[in-house]
Length: 436
Ligand code: FAD
Image (tube, rainbow, N blue to C red):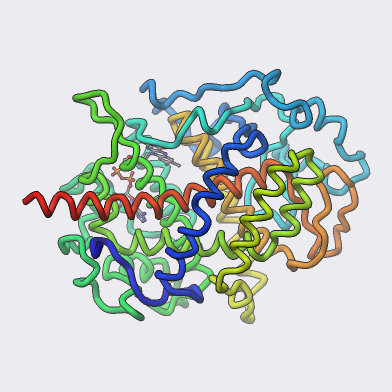
């Protein structure tokens, strides 16, 4: 199916679209399987933190916005706060010192992480609370996206207020090209930047950056955010509530409007997936060790091991050593982390519980991938948060918690499902055209 078919090399990565699709075919079933295990389906999250940036007044009252929480007694004992409390590091441990805003942010972290011992947190069964259409939209939702794009992409991005655009979610600058990629300006192998994205990226440039010459790090930051946003949109369209019939089903028109008309968004979904895949293949043994050290069932460790084998058996997807390697590497890395941490704080401003749950989880998952790619040498054993064995002065000594691994694997699954959903929409598109 040609609709929304991307071909050629993926810009900023080191693989092509066809390879990524093949890899996703190989991984999809295993990912689907692993997120259904108890280790990966129960997640603790604080849904009640105040928005630190503005008074959030847009609480979504739709039923679909609510989250079913799970009583602690249903959570396998080893992962309950009480059991984790027993593992709490000693006060002398450098990882436990609370910072001023209560959250200990280690220098290696790209996210403001929640404390699994936090009494405000609730347990959520992710399978019971799928990411799907909730009806959350309007001012509250657009304010969050606006804050992310305008205030956190290193420099202001021209945000187009959806309420002033002509079509649902239309940006006003996207090429309404009739869905095929063929009418895109050609980039490398047809996978280069679209005009609309060039405008966005161009405007990301700071005073010293000029248009397309924006540095790789800033481009990657933008692409990961846009890829996440597009992936969320794909899930909304894939699991959409027809308010006339009350039925949940894929909504092709929703997909066309939000993704099909904006090929650069789809490119960013692939890019984000590629980055996550590389984090998996780079740090597979350490992820497995975290599972072993946090009471995972042996069968789940086996499943993760299979996933890691498939990912490492695939051609390399992303070269993380190409980033943060220039003369201002350290400054850029610090900025990159600060901005990404801000994105994680903004998630507390999402006015729909279900969206906040998945937003927080996926930002943590992406932050974990960034940490594995850029704060970890790929070889040292990862110390457990509880071990107190972290050497502050050793840059390779990073801590990985169960929550981060759960968020990372579930985020990879979300992106994998997005790519699978795109396949579904290609078929629906072809089917609709056949009928005409
Ligand atoms: P929006 O998606 O709100 O986009 C706003 C503007 O951003 C667009 O007009 C466009 O200019 C730009 N834009 C859109 N996509 C991209 C992209 N990929 N890259 C770059 N720029 C882009 N709703 C649900 O129904 N279920 C959910 O689970 C859900 N989760 C959410 C999680 C978060 C963190 C947030 C902030 C919102 C969530 N929402 C969810 C709301 C949803 O994302 C939309 O905001 C809402 O559906 C309204 O969509 P829209 O078409 O007006 O444009």
